[in-house]
Image 1 (cartoon, one colour):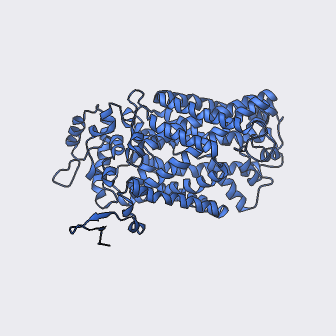
Image 2 (cartoon, one colour):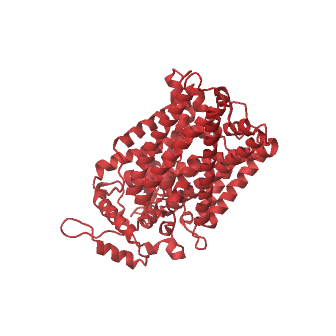
Image 3 (cartoon, one colour):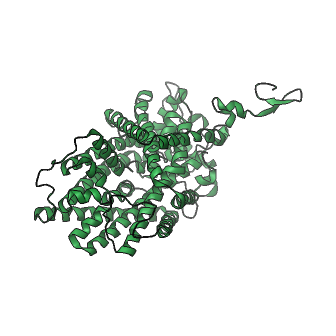
Length: 572
């Protein structure tokens, strides 16, 4: 089984256009001519920029992996032998169809989902004042930016599809990479998609059954149904939404990215409209009186309250790693990926600050703290029922755009896992008619629908807070490890070393908070992640008998020379 895994490193070879680098006799320097000849022999179209970019990465990787956990170069094999090549399909990593605007659609499109329109109240209720709340939003955005900058360095140095899976594999070996894929594919990604689909369905239900009336209750919408639409309606619409997004992504990459571009424009336009309306109200003093007593009047004095507010703010900024899952499909990932991330983060931070300022200009602090549908209350206060309906449509469309962006990138994780042998190889294939990973998309849709039908999302939020940030921590820690272990690795973008250190501290804070606030649920999270260990050894690690400690119970029997049978290592 381990041999099969080594022979399925296709995703890494395809993504970086790698062939084993030749070395000269003087010191192991890379031979450009030798590598170019190999690429030519593989009948690949000329891509000089990406080729030159990857030669240095391959040569450093080859030199530095002598004592590494996993030696890629030793097990390279011709790309023409890949399943996609045999089937006549163009691998995703060779399509190179994603530009800067598409990248912004994938990052901003996920970060601006429903949160900024629905529940800034979690931050406001804990911070206690407009000034403190805006300060928390700013700090949360900057801290999220440290994680994004760390991923930008990894993505430019290791421009492969799969995001954290590729980075963990390169830095720590196949087992941590598998555990990430195991957790992300089975829970994190489909669970996130299910939540967004349910929120989309509830806003559609609100539009149909109550004409966009905003909530006044403090509880956010959930899968228990709302006072506006029945549970069966929410689940049916959510499933239909997932199927539509899956079809869009299955038809063509261009259709899904163009869809993302359109929704990016709609999201930004909605937030700009909210900001302009709020400023007009603020200038003419016809709104709330939140600023009459000072921006920081009533600020909380509890450090714990600020910790909770910061947690909520960081959650709202999540999605900054979305582009890393499709880095190999970018036209120039080493340059464009860091550029997109450093464009997206300030855009989102400014949009969040401006929108919250507008909310404070129109709505009283007490309304902000109680409502779970702030944008709807905002629209109703300014324009009446028509405004509530318009903003209901905006939030629903924003959810649909976020779902499309997650579906696009998460399917690439499934695809890479199929390539790497973590999943059956059928999931690592591209359809030769559409040039899309249809099998991966179908698997992703099926798991997401299961979550929609039977999922319990409060538990899922705890799961994400612990498991999601655990892998964020390990991946960003890899930036520091690579700086020490592979100092000569070409890094087209290099962040300040304090950046990953700071984010690791933030991640540990979020993990610790999840553990202490929901110890039982966090224990189940740890148990679930660890169940991936035997699955790894069964699927890709050479057999259950190779597991540390427990592998003794799974020793295979063998035929001895005397005709008897027994376990490997003895006749018993």
